[in-house]
Length: 347
Picture: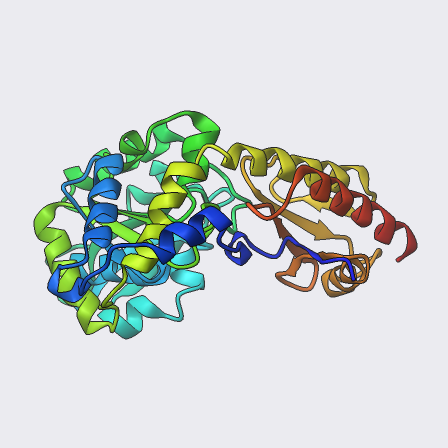
């Protein structure tokens, strides 16, 4: 039986043979005691790439983001974020449950906020009726925004405004590597506009597990303590960290292939009556598209594609997402594009 072309997410990637080999031979120790040399190497490497003093290895991007929310706030504080960001939509209410923090959401342009949307959103700190505005969270690239790359000039304007008013900046950079490759802008240049940055190794880079939170040394020391509180302390985690180090060495530049393959699939969407890209252009490896109700439902299209060997994710009644990644070749992207054209002709 022919294997399915899985475009549901870049989280479905599997470790390559080379990655498995370095994981099997990794030098390990007890990371809670700070004794795992491979974890220590990964944390230093990540901090150096992002231009930060320190980094902390964690199991997931959700934990990394929620650590940032917790260490930067007090119960009763408020964070500002885009309406469709991951922290607000896909982390199980973490800010409220784990940190007693509320989210004030703003409707960005495919996930991209403009400074003008933020300038009047700081609550009066002297009014005891109000929460304290404390934190600004941005996402780059933006998942629900269709893989949009945050314009650097917008990030710089927001960060300068935030710091001027005593706010803290956090970046959910789960797919920051995609933005780095697509723009040629270094990781440290993106990261310098934020107090803390979260990055993932288990999406486009293909590692089986792992994210990291980077920032000032004292802040990361606090995050290490909260990681233990949240149940994220790991022991011989060097086996996992080795896969992440391999990914940093071998799988970053190749993300450009995923971007090209995403545009192949996106062209099929453009060519097909009844389908429309949202947003209209594809920046990186995510293709979000809408199905006209007169054609079918998103679930119908997803089922027809599955019957033709392609998996996509129906995100709503009329909306789907396709994501290219390490385990999808150019020829597979072309086959998926042809499958989409085919099923939309016979629906």
